[in-house]
Structures are given as structure tokens and as C-alpha cells.
Amino acid sequence: MRSKIVAGNWKMNKNAAETEALLTELAAKLPDTNAQVMVAPTFVNLAGAVRSLESSVIQVIAQNMHFAESGAYTGEISADMLLGIGVETVILGHSERRAYFKEDDAILAQKVKAALDKNMKVMFCFGEELEDRKSGNHFNVVESQLKNALFSLDASAWSSIILAYEPVWAIGTGETASPEQAQEMHAFIRKTITDAYDASIAGNVSILYGGSVKPANAKEIFGKPDVDGGLIGGASLKADDFVAIIEAI
Ligand code: 13P
Image (cartoon, rainbow, N blue to C red; front, side, top):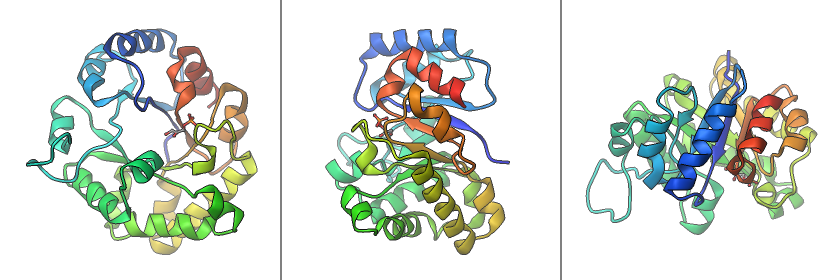
């Protein structure tokens, strides 16, 4: 059985005091839910967030990590550093990392492998750009992103993978994929994994949708059979909005 997940990607927002305040409010307002709830504050606030959420079910996850164990990589963070402060899940492949920091499929494949080698869980993000969708190439793009970064993994690795389909044209734009567009792509992703592995792996992996999810549209998107939750950007920065999205699942 795959898990329902609602995760907040805070990106480069919230200083230490604001992080603490938002987490306190979230923990207090968290509704009863079967879904896993995760938040990804910035690197500098991760350790504090883990401490603040010690007695909460909310999980703290990282927004990125480097593939090397350690060494001369100024400004980077390793898997061991995350594990050392109690962070066991990492987002990899976010479109902003791909676009602004030139992380390509080959780098992401290394990062995924490095995280899994350390027994971390990976929330792997991918999705097409607007031109891909306009030209009808979106299925090919998504298939190749999955294939290049994930399809050389052993079948057993898939229990540590969460997928987040985030069409780039819907991120931070206010434009959301329609529930039908999300379902169509999520079903395609599951079929692609079935073809590469088998139906059991495809059926057990959680596939989140991300891109302008808000309280007003979450219920309809989460209602689709192949959508197992959401990766939320802007709306995760306000406790009431994030809570309403969690309630929608
Ligand atoms: P928005 O919800 O702000 O569109 O961001 C989505 C996202 O990129 C989450 O990783």
C-alpha cells in the first residue's frame, strides 16, 4: 500500500525565528490524518526544526544534498551531515535546482544513488516545461527524466523512493495542472514504472503532484486515483493554508 504524503517545500524562505514560529503553529494546528506530513526548511534551519518537532509526527526533510561523501565542495552538504542531525529524507531534482544550478539527469542519478547508499529516502522531482507540453512532448520528457535518474536502480531501492511530478509551468505561477492533467500524467508514470520494473513497484510508489496547489484546488487534485498527495511551495509557508491542504487529503 502506498502512503499519502503532503510535503511543504519552503525553498529559500523563513529565517530561524520564522521557521520556529511556523513549525510551532503547524504542530499545534495539525489535523488528525493518515497522511505523512513533511516540511523542508532551508539547510541552516534543519537542525532546529528537528528539535522543535521532536514530539510531533511532522517529518523534517532536506531540499537538496551533494553526491560526494565529503571533501572539497564549498557550500555543499552531504548525506551523513543530514543523517547526523536526524534528517532521513531528501528532495532531489527540483526544477529550480535543474534550471538555476544546472543539475542534470547524470548529476541527479549520482545524488539519488548517494542518498540510497546511506539508507536515506529520496523525494525525486521531475516534470516538463511549458514548451514540452505545448509541443506534445511532455510524456517523452517525463519518461526520460525517470529513466535517466532512476531506472538503473535495483527493484529493492524503490521502497525508498517518493516521486513528485511538478510541471515547471505550474510552479509558482498560480497556474495548476487540471486534476485530469495530473491524473493522466500520474497514470503514465505508473505505467512507465510497470514497464521498466513491475506493477507491484509501480503500485506501491507514492506519486505526489506539485505546482500551485492551494486549499481551493487540493481536494480535487488529491481525489484522483493516481495522485497520492502533494509537494507544496508557496501555500506551505502559511500554517492555515498548509493545514487546509492536509485536511483535503
Ligand atoms: P508552488 O506550490 O509555489 O507552485 O511550488 C511548487 C513547488 O515547486 C514545490 O516543490
